[in-house]
Length: 161
Length: 128
Image (tube, rainbow over all chains, first blue to last red; front, side, top):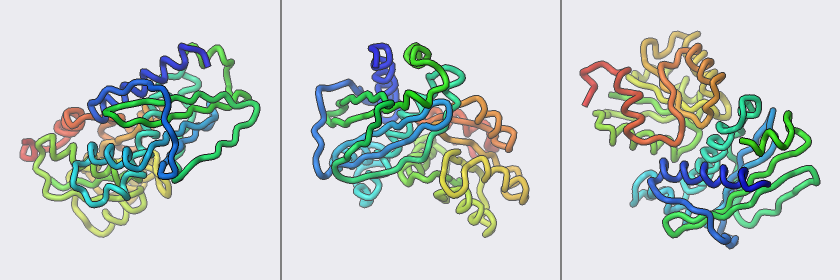
């Protein structure tokens, strides 16, 4: 993935966190995975085929949930899965909206969820960008995987976006 | 004012409710549905609402099909519907408006954005 592609993803994530939580969100070194982690994935289909995955620890997910709906809510633990899904959904949507006219018509799935460590299956034609971000002292990981063979346009067209 | 919020995410339903209250609207009740089918069931049960806010991309029945079914069945006639979604494509906007939506707002949104989109659609008596 070229630097322009990475920079655009970082901008999208920063804008989403600014609007959703009014907090700064910056790329960070790494996010360690724990067995208490939550992951949510949204799939692209059509002109762009791939997946966007967000993963974070349960504690961070509960804190983001409290920021969204207020603290003191008894359902924080149950709703935290939803929050990870929505963060993933909104980042994927915002990234997709910035693609060129043809590729932005791809569809998004509803989020799917997994708890615990994730084993990713990657075939040879998949291009994957893995980033770690930090906001308000909480970190999360993001993976953007795109299927090279399924794209309508050349890689140049996608990296120009 | 009574609102119906339709979204498969329980967190987003609460976020929308919170945004409506932070916008200063006098909310007497917020009904919630996880998809278009549940929303239709609520309306068919005779629940009266003054505003509907619906996601587009939902399992079971999406927001566009929900709108079309409301129109076919004469449900919530005259009630303004605002679509709230991550999908910002022009095609979806056109389809939503054609199906009867009166407005469209993209996630993420602020309470001020919800207020700006919703207030013009409500009678003055419901304004803060």
